[in-house]
Length: 252
Image 1: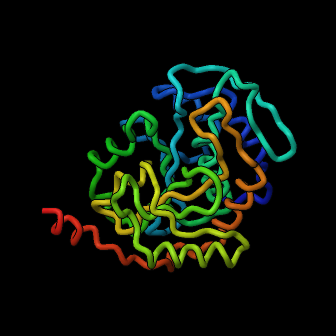
Image 2: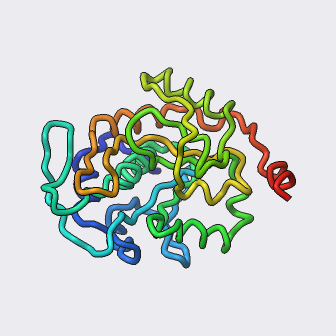
């Protein structure tokens, strides 16, 4: 249904980053999202491909207070701006990766959240509205981490995925030529919202540097490499070793 032979990473990313997108303007990306996408009552977009217990996430807003035209500066594989605005690679690199996975028919439920930059507004609202729906997933995977090679195991100091999961995922990426490893220094993104009900929640590097600043840039070749490797990962075979219910009992 979704599989597409050709996917243009560079033009997809450039289209997604034509403007900065403050919270409330995420609807302007509807035209770039796949056919069959649905929207929930809080403005988040989602689509399910096949049968899977994996939730893939990214966010549509950027770290900005107004909608501004982005002037791209391209030097080989590096996409930056003229310095008058941020680029919006956070999180349009992640959106690009998810769009590629969808185009390749990779099974999963894909959520494009609103308002991540102002406190994970969209993902929190989605969880409040449909906790039972999200409880079906064994893993929640965001592509919203800077640089290369990080599999985030802790967000704001709290564990979000097990070491067993991180090692297994690193091994999977290694089979496809990418070096990823466990990283406990995560900050906070949408997957952290689901740690009370989803066993394994992580955030993966997506080829973005200097996020939230005017010096932000993306290496689009690395974004492509991550996406193509992620499409080959056996997501459903990854372990679910972290027990969110046990953690809640210990906290109580």
